[in-house]
Image (cartoon, rainbow, N blue to C red; front, side, top):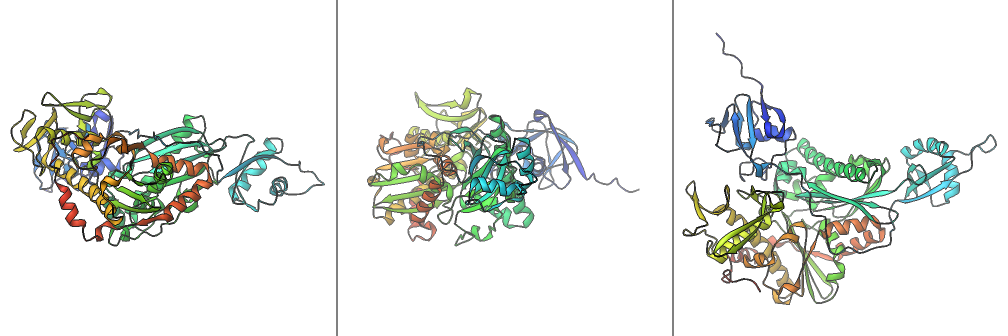
Amino acid sequence: MNAHPKPASFRVRFAHLDREIDCAADETIYQAARRSGVRIVGACGGRGACGSCMVRAHEGRLTDDDGAEIEGGRKWAHACRVRPIADCAIEIAPRSLAPVTRADVYAQDEVDIVPAPAVFFEDVTVAQATLVDHADDFSRVRREIGARIETIDIEAVRMLPQILRDNDWSARIFSHQGRIVGVAAPGRRAVGLAIDLGTTNVVGFLLDLETGARLASLGIENPQAAWGADLVSRINHAASGRRQQDELQAAARTAINALGHDLARAVGLVAHDIRDVTICGNTAMQHLLLGLPVRQLGRAPFIAATHDAMDLVARDLGFDFAAGARVHVAGNVGGFVGSDHVTALLATRARWEQGGVSLVMDIGTNTEISLMHDGKIISASCPSGPALEGGHISCGMRAADGAIERVTVEDGRLRIAMIANAAPVGVCGSGVLDAIAAGLRLGLVDKSGRIGESHADIIVDQGRRAIRLADGVQIVQNDVRAVQLAKSAVRTGVDLLLDRMGLNEGRIDRFIIAGAFGAYIDLDSAMVIGLLPRLPRERFAQVGNAAGVGVTRMLASTAERELAREIAARCAYVELSTDPQFQKRFMKNIGFSSLAGERAS
């Protein structure tokens, strides 16, 4: 008698999300959830290295990689390491459920500029066609506009006859570099979309192209995070095959389309009203968006396909905007110093051009640094990884409701504060830095990074010591080590650039910290753990999303695009990994300062 064949798939129900999906017999829960669009965090891309994708089964049965059955009920397991062997009901841990992130879109260095968009528009009225005047519709428009118009996009010419006849022979004409790229009813609002394509978040800004005014802004989590929180994971996935690269390109495209749709709808428009788009991002993000090969980017000597700015047609990238919408992708500097850093330099130019010594840093998964002195700019990137933003941390999560964002010391004990004053479910990047700094101040962590033994806030969980922040939320030894590696990478980058210019950290007149994460870190905590040099607080400026401000300026004015090109050309790229002092400095910066027990001044 033959045994019954094994089912090809099982039903997996996420009751708390009101979702039910199919999971193939050879798929992990993580793979099935990601494929079906369930928002489960996977900082390491499902390799079992981070512990961010925790689930448990309330009904049904699971097995692990070794084929051992997982007990249901209270036991949590890595979603990327378990498979169903029956229909089941799964709960995703609160900190493992990716929020619909509203990324920081605020920045200090916003100034008014005179609008001069790349897509020009004007309302025209043409002579009505008659049996005597047989000129075609395009010729009539060109006759009114003048010699600067040479040709017309096929989609625009398809729309032109109806638009003219429906509007008493008038139309709004959109042109780009002598080519008509769109037509609409007279007076139709012209808007553009600026995109900061970050490794962690994607932020969009909708601009009125006529006035340069910002109409709306929104940030969402980069959906590429399903393939890993860090650049290396995504590059490796994309380099494994054409299908995999297409997946990452589609994820970026989907995010940008969604931002365009939601932002346009927020102001009573539609995505097809978006006529121009500017995009900045680090080198890897741009390659993945454009479908450029990335294998060579992930291996020494880390060579990009191109660093130049590119002008493209939106429909060629799969964007669902106006038929003739244009896209300007800002240029990079070198290595992983991308156009997001260039646009941050553009936005903060009034600060770093004051003379003296300035340093601009955008701390994140890929930290980018530029040092300015005597008219020179040298730039480098540091693979700091996601730990500083809460990734690859045992109880880490993005900055969302319930994330512990502040940890302070009060009467010799740790005190916490959560985003939105919600119940604590995890700890985000600023909270991780605060927790370790507070641990150093209290002696819970020593100079080597080792968690101590005797304190009311030290617990032993599954045989390992941990710093307890709240019920179920703690900092373990591996978390401290991950932060040590990240902060050492960043600090070593600063040190080596200073060495190149023959300077010491005390010579820094202005330390400009850009980016959403940098806007929220506590400077004292960052100095205590050694992420930032110990400078007087007045020398620091936390400017928020400067990259977003810069890419918005490039949307409003072609002059800003030229200025961005000039800034990128001025930056001399430094490959830190080839510096003979890199390893020595990195190891020196791994530990915590002997001043850790003191509060930074």
